[in-house]
Length: 343
Image 1 (cartoon, one colour):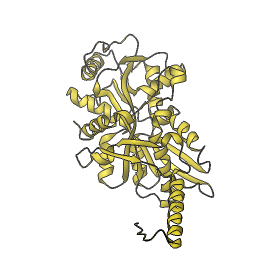
Image 2 (cartoon, rainbow, N blue to C red):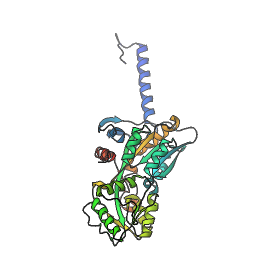
Image 3 (cartoon, rainbow, N blue to C red):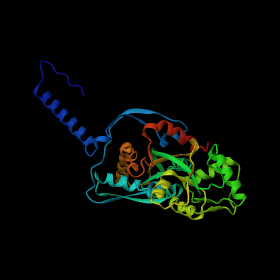
Image 4 (cartoon, rainbow, N blue to C red):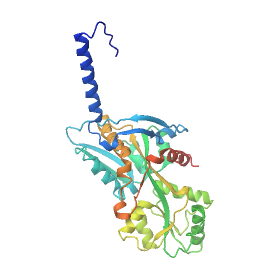
């Protein structure tokens, strides 16, 4: 708005100018209301799965101020379907409890299943957001129009665990593909057991992609057991059977610390092939009155990931169970795209 004044400012012009200043101040205050000081971020690089399904990676630099909606007058329930590793470690409950300091009336309910099942729940309209780590599945549901607003929020690594005597000899393998080949050979000799998630999860897909690279098919072999279960259950089974399995490092560390895995240990954790990327999405079909608070929660997690995710587990384990993604987002988005394409 431009105001032209001649022969000095008139009374009406001055009143209009004062009103304009008041409106600007009110709007600025509303934008920052309910916004934790730590989440006001300048020059944030925004890049993530939502941009990658178009087969390009776009870097957007802007000054970002997040608007959080006012608290609901009565209790609202937001259902989020999620991969088991984020839930079993306690991270999601921690994030929800921190969010409830701002929104005590927004109850976050998690459905912890494999990533594939979490996305199917979203497709049925039974959740309003998802936390997943299976780029190939994510791409499928992005293209189907089920999920939107994808962002990478964390990463860690997969590891191969197994009996301390390591009958397959994978400790000194040069890469994870060779490690799996050695497990196959040991299994054929009756010296090893491998337990697969077998549940269509992100971890299960990662395992299958490694087997594919070996050129070997363990399915149907007596030493290859498909559990159809979550990571926590598979780790317990592997401990009981003295078996090998592929695990995310966070669930393994939590259970190991609790003394629940005395018969297995981390044997292999080398190489970029084992990176594990976690992303969040909104579900398009979610009713708008609930979606706004689902989005507020995802924004809260994304813009506070350094303080919340990056510090989670440090006191108990001496290191975070998950790494904040925000400083490596461009690199992780490129890796996400490669994984989504099966490269």
